[in-house]
Length: 85
Image (cartoon, rainbow, N blue to C red; front, side):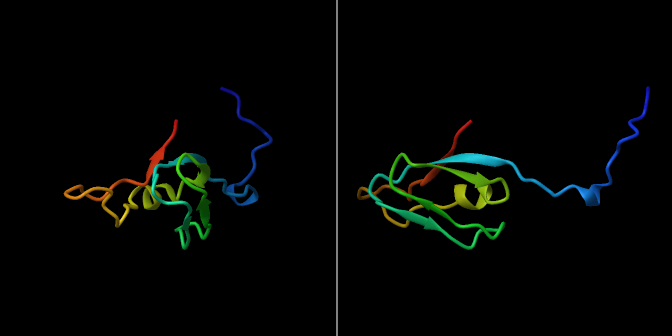
């Protein structure tokens, strides 16, 4: 197997992180701002159905977010976000 002669050291390449599309599910919330994420980025979701590209480092934090509001008596906290393929 031939070796590439144009190899680049890791320090020469910037680290890039994948973007994941996140869907906002909160129908009773008009806007949600996700600030102070692990990557240092912040995101604004502008109502139910909005889709935002999110840095892969922030995905677990955003998906773990639950609404503190119960949309109906006896309901548990609802998920606010869903990851799209």
